Length: 311
Image (cartoon, rainbow, N blue to C red; front, top):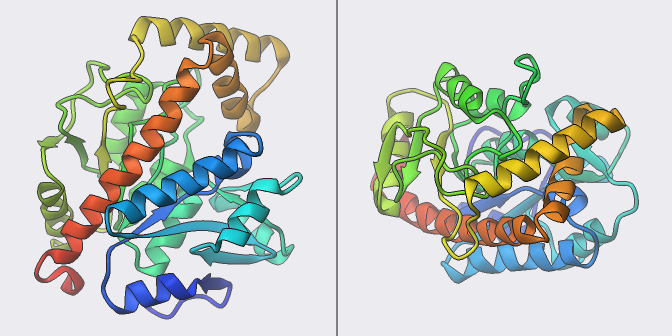
């Protein structure tokens, strides 16, 4: 593990045991539970994603804020309480100190989860899609991209959310020094779609190859994340033109309704789901579980690598 954790951190007994024994661990975000789906679908998803990690022989560590403490690794009861919580706060990096001081509870975004995972010594994190540069606003850049540039963690995702400006997001990742590795793909996936025409920095076809790149990155003294992008499963992948039509319609509706800032992403994803007859939601759920499975395999490969703890 890293240096002693801040007193605001609470690690679950299962996670502590796994870290102390040098067993593979996968961090999981909780904003998808608090703000991604309504109850009870959010609870079912949280359970399914953790089950995918366990099925591959790794320990899941869902991260959330509970009564002003950063909990790394949640019990079944805590996940259920989080899924049923009324008006939970969506917690990114800027909100962390506010939530700690106010003893608040809520779901952590990619940026906040990534920060907490790195603090706890967890080297692999699975999510759906990262944030990025918003369309039509080059200065509206997600804190996810900043934190990716300073957290030595393998982040397994299906690219950035399709509602974003993907070419600009790809450029910012390069500026932040974040290597983008395609997992069994030569293209940066578009969350709901497998193809965007955007390149990756390197392709790998096995968890072991991904682990070797991560280890080499950190042993060289770099402290950025390694972004491992995984296309959505073919069975649920959507045609690019179909999803783009839905996104354009949702963006127009958001503009008319005056929805901006933190409220924009949940609104857009919900509208895209409605406009696609639920197809985008099915893709989202499937890719979340697929990413968790890949992340667990990468974590196992990383922990099996000689010298893993000595970078």
